Image (cartoon, rainbow, N blue to C red):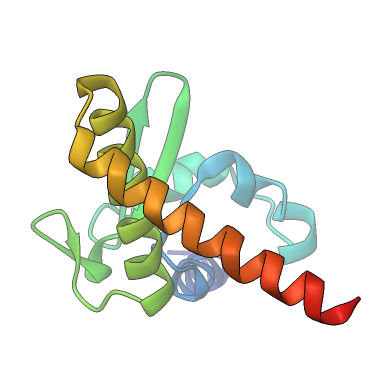
Length: 129
Protein backbone atom coordinates (compact mmCIF):
# COMPACT_ATOMS: atom_id res chain seq x y z
CA UNK A 1 0.00 0.00 0.00
CA UNK A 2 1.38 3.39 -0.99
CA UNK A 3 1.77 6.23 1.49
CA UNK A 4 -0.85 8.33 -0.35
CA UNK A 5 -3.36 5.48 -0.28
CA UNK A 6 -2.67 4.81 3.40
CA UNK A 7 -3.26 8.50 4.18
CA UNK A 8 -6.51 8.48 2.16
CA UNK A 9 -7.78 5.39 4.00
CA UNK A 10 -6.98 6.99 7.36
CA UNK A 11 -8.74 10.25 6.46
CA UNK A 12 -11.87 8.51 5.17
CA UNK A 13 -11.89 6.23 8.23
CA UNK A 14 -11.83 9.25 10.56
CA UNK A 15 -14.42 11.07 8.45
CA UNK A 16 -16.82 8.12 8.73
CA UNK A 17 -16.14 7.92 12.47
CA UNK A 18 -17.29 11.53 12.82
CA UNK A 19 -20.64 10.89 11.13
CA UNK A 20 -23.67 9.98 13.23
CA UNK A 21 -24.60 6.84 11.32
CA UNK A 22 -21.02 5.80 10.39
CA UNK A 23 -22.00 5.79 6.72
CA UNK A 24 -22.17 8.28 3.88
CA UNK A 25 -22.83 8.33 0.14
CA UNK A 26 -19.67 7.96 -1.92
CA UNK A 27 -20.65 10.99 -4.00
CA UNK A 28 -20.60 13.17 -0.87
CA UNK A 29 -17.12 12.00 0.07
CA UNK A 30 -15.89 12.60 -3.47
CA UNK A 31 -16.84 16.27 -3.07
CA UNK A 32 -14.06 16.49 -0.46
CA UNK A 33 -11.39 14.84 -2.68
CA UNK A 34 -9.66 18.08 -3.56
CA UNK A 35 -9.91 19.37 0.00
CA UNK A 36 -8.48 16.13 1.43
CA UNK A 37 -5.78 16.06 -1.27
CA UNK A 38 -6.74 12.72 -2.88
CA UNK A 39 -5.56 11.73 -6.34
CA UNK A 40 -7.30 8.37 -6.03
CA UNK A 41 -10.66 7.09 -7.21
CA UNK A 42 -12.66 7.00 -3.96
CA UNK A 43 -14.85 4.07 -5.02
CA UNK A 44 -11.79 1.97 -5.88
CA UNK A 45 -10.28 2.87 -2.51
CA UNK A 46 -13.29 1.32 -0.75
CA UNK A 47 -13.21 -1.77 -2.95
CA UNK A 48 -9.49 -2.25 -2.23
CA UNK A 49 -10.14 -2.29 1.55
CA UNK A 50 -13.15 -4.58 2.13
CA UNK A 51 -12.10 -5.35 5.72
CA UNK A 52 -12.47 -1.71 6.70
CA UNK A 53 -15.28 -0.45 4.45
CA UNK A 54 -18.48 -1.98 3.10
CA UNK A 55 -19.72 -0.52 -0.17
CA UNK A 56 -23.45 -0.85 -0.71
CA UNK A 57 -25.01 -0.30 -4.11
CA UNK A 58 -28.71 0.44 -4.10
CA UNK A 59 -29.95 1.60 -7.46
CA UNK A 60 -27.56 4.29 -8.64
CA UNK A 61 -26.47 5.28 -5.12
CA UNK A 62 -23.29 3.94 -3.60
CA UNK A 63 -23.06 4.14 0.18
CA UNK A 64 -19.97 3.32 2.21
CA UNK A 65 -20.24 1.92 5.75
CA UNK A 66 -17.53 1.68 8.37
CA UNK A 67 -17.46 -2.08 9.06
CA UNK A 68 -16.11 -1.85 12.60
CA UNK A 69 -19.08 0.30 13.68
CA UNK A 70 -21.71 -2.29 12.69
CA UNK A 71 -22.58 -5.74 13.93
CA UNK A 72 -25.40 -7.75 12.37
CA UNK A 73 -26.68 -4.68 10.54
CA UNK A 74 -26.94 -2.47 13.64
CA UNK A 75 -24.66 0.18 15.08
CA UNK A 76 -22.63 -1.19 17.98
CA UNK A 77 -22.51 2.15 19.86
CA UNK A 78 -25.34 4.30 18.51
CA UNK A 79 -25.12 8.05 18.93
CA UNK A 80 -28.01 9.68 20.89
CA UNK A 81 -28.84 11.70 17.76
CA UNK A 82 -29.12 8.45 15.81
CA UNK A 83 -31.51 7.03 18.41
CA UNK A 84 -33.64 10.19 18.27
CA UNK A 85 -33.78 9.99 14.46
CA UNK A 86 -34.88 6.35 14.59
CA UNK A 87 -37.61 7.10 17.14
CA UNK A 88 -38.88 10.01 15.06
CA UNK A 89 -38.93 7.83 11.96
CA UNK A 90 -40.87 5.15 13.85
CA UNK A 91 -43.42 7.74 14.96
CA UNK A 92 -43.82 9.09 11.44
CA UNK A 93 -44.26 5.61 10.00
CA UNK A 94 -46.70 4.66 12.80
CA UNK A 95 -48.65 7.88 12.31
CA UNK A 96 -48.91 7.35 8.55
CA UNK A 97 -49.94 3.73 9.06
CA UNK A 98 -52.64 4.68 11.56
CA UNK A 99 -53.85 7.49 9.36
CA UNK A 100 -54.44 5.07 6.49
CA UNK A 101 -55.96 2.33 8.67
CA UNK A 102 -58.31 4.79 10.37
CA UNK A 103 -57.29 4.08 13.97
CA UNK A 104 -59.72 6.27 15.91
CA UNK A 105 -57.82 5.90 19.21
CA UNK A 106 -54.68 7.38 17.66
CA UNK A 107 -56.71 10.22 16.12
CA UNK A 108 -58.35 11.05 19.45
CA UNK A 109 -54.96 11.15 21.20
CA UNK A 110 -53.57 13.40 18.47
CA UNK A 111 -56.62 15.68 18.64
CA UNK A 112 -56.41 15.98 22.44
CA UNK A 113 -52.67 16.78 22.24
CA UNK A 114 -53.37 19.39 19.56
CA UNK A 115 -56.16 20.93 21.63
CA UNK A 116 -53.91 21.00 24.69
CA UNK A 117 -51.19 22.74 22.71
CA UNK A 118 -53.63 25.29 21.26
CA UNK A 119 -55.03 26.09 24.73
CA UNK A 120 -51.52 26.59 26.07
CA UNK A 121 -50.55 28.70 23.05
CA UNK A 122 -53.69 30.85 23.24
CA UNK A 123 -53.14 31.33 26.98
CA UNK A 124 -49.60 32.57 26.38
CA UNK A 125 -50.61 35.00 23.63
CA UNK A 126 -53.48 36.50 25.66
CA UNK A 127 -51.12 37.03 28.66
CA UNK A 128 -48.67 38.97 26.50
CA UNK A 129 -51.35 41.43 25.22
